[in-house]
Amino acid sequence: MQYYLRHYFNPDFDYLHLKPGGENGSSDVYSLGYVQNAINGQVLAEIIPLEDAGPEPDPRFILDKPRFPTGSNTRIDPHYPNYLLAAANGYVFYLDGKITVKCLLNVRQDVSFQTGNIFFVGDMAIHGSVRAGFSVQANNVRIMGMVEGGVVRARRNLLIDGGVRGGAGQHSLVDAGGKLLSPFLEKVEARARDNIVIEKSCLYSTVYAGASMVVREQAYGGIINAYGSMYVGRQLGNKAGIPTKIYLGYDPLSIRQLEKIDHIIAQQSQTITHLNAVAGHLPPDTNDVSRKLQALREQRKQLIRRRDELWARLSMDESYMHNCRLLVPGRIYPGVEISIGRAFLTIDRVYKKITCRLVEHDIVIEHMQHSHLGTSR
Image 1 (cartoon, one colour):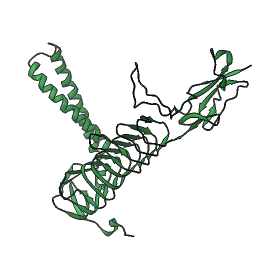
Image 2 (cartoon, one colour):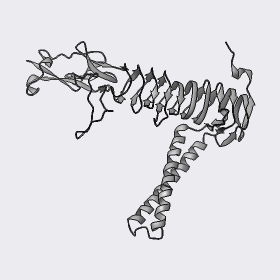
Image 3 (tube, one colour):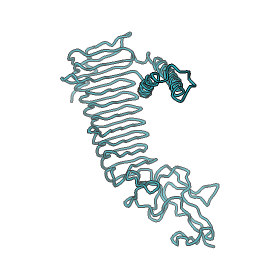
Image 4 (tube, helix red, strand yellow):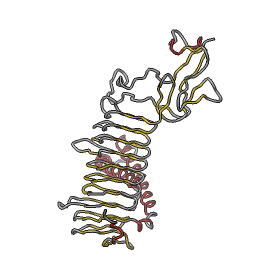
């Protein structure tokens, strides 16, 4: 009796010869399907009787014995031994004639029109840059080049060797479920649920750190939100007095939600003002315009209630805020605005070697003790 090996992935997949995706004859050059993802427990292949394989079965996969070509990170289903399963999250392919799942995806080029966007269920190492308009997503991500106007999402930690730059109409977003490390951020949005460490500079960026943030050299322009403390080694703000806002003590994820809610409320308020001029004097059920006006009023009321609930939840963290610190062993310039919880402070002159912290309900400036400065080597 002969058997047939039925695949639930493309055994002839070649990432070097990708074709654009798309529906109804359209071509999507950003969706090339660079990798065949496999989830732990997913069926990869099945052994069936040859007569069930249909007309013209591929002769390469006709078997004399019901034996799988098992490679690393695969396993035979103990309850249904005619199924071969993935034993880990990764990408599936043939390696030396064996069905194999590999957990680390090495992209040995830039993420660009040659690769398209890449979504991967394991860890990813990009031996190049992420170009403008392209996106990647994986568990732990290391980028050995730059992120230039691209989008990178790491479900865990994100390490970028070359830095992140947006600007010139190129939106750059980097988002980490764990830690984020980069030599610099410039005109980008950066988010991390854990610490953010920037080796050189953070310029004109919007940052959300779920724990603390370290900028070893300089930071100015933009807005930085950190749940914990912030350290800026050499310079915070600049001589030109460019507005630089530091918010400490509030959960950045909740702050982002509040920003979105405020934006929607503002849009709805504009629409309500316009509709009021047209149908504000009419009963709610008079026509489509009056019904839309009534619905928008209800939606705005719910959003305002949601916003108030978020603020109430944030205020419960206020005892924790006394642990927050802004540490600047270098210089801090006028134009820097500091908030710790509900307390607010505007820097009005140049300071050196200071710590800002919350005392009672006010932010105080203290000269750093020697222990904060560390020792030079």
